[in-house]
Length: 121
Length: 108
Image 1 (cartoon, rainbow over the protein chains, first blue to last red):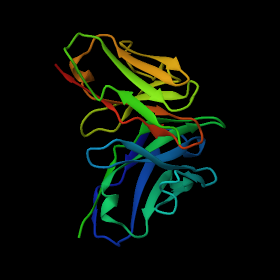
Image 2: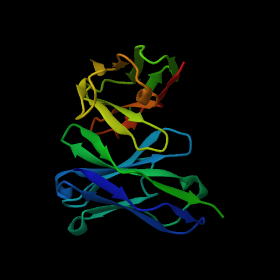
Image 3: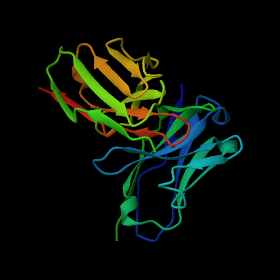
């Protein structure tokens, strides 16, 4: 059974750093990309970027380029989303999703349960 | 960036009735269109991909159609568990994948 288990909810202060994780099981992490998706409170879904865990190649949505870093450790089947300096506007629910990517498409087929990040002074 | 729009924003339907949700892309996405269902407090669940192919385990009452820029999700006979928010999403490789704003299906 495919599962993506995300790290627990976090409460942070503005300016702090944070890394959240997404551990994959039930399939080979290196056979699929992992995407990260943001959902701000009461809002819709925004694709942030993706990583190919086999070689750590990444693509970012231009709206998120430079604001977050996506990485992966294939030895422990885990992908990460990292902030170096959080802002209050980063308060959101963050999902990882297994992504079946080809040269022309990239489908998000299985999703983690989400990690709630709250940034408040 | 391809902009996805959905209509209506809210659809009020009685159990057992048919629901028809629309999605439009600002430029052609071919058949690289997916539909997701999201219930409160839960992650999105893939329903339809390739515009019309049901994902594993999705009941036959869900069907998708369309190609290019116009797409439709039909729920033939609404069950109580179908009341949720539905998002369409294009997944062309680049520009980045984008989601529609969602259609909330609630109980009439």
